[in-house]
Image 1 (cartoon, rainbow, N blue to C red):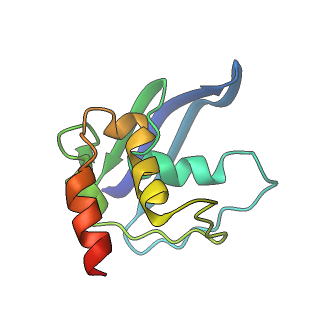
Image 2 (image 1 turned 30 degrees about the horizontal axis):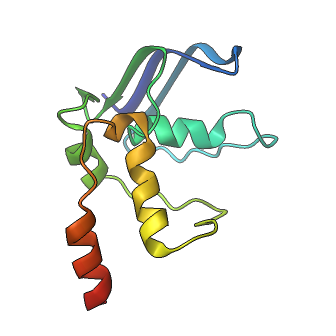
Length: 123
């Protein structure tokens, strides 16, 4: 059984196909290298697996469980991903943390402004 599986993934950006009918799987113990030019979708694959990007159609399955709004946080707790080009951009720590709530996968979640301010003050 694949530990990560993408089935018939379709994603469009700016009216162009980034992935069309894309299938991909990783079995336990596999070592996978993703190589290619900038902008071809390598980071998008990781964002799909973590539930930050949703395909226009198709299915993302991690550990035998299709990712949806109800289980995405459980799946994220089991995966670690460190981008090779870590960039938090410009602005404050609060701005950076707030940006996670702009992803479609987090659209239904409320930004905990008061809690964040308390934690930032604490640290």
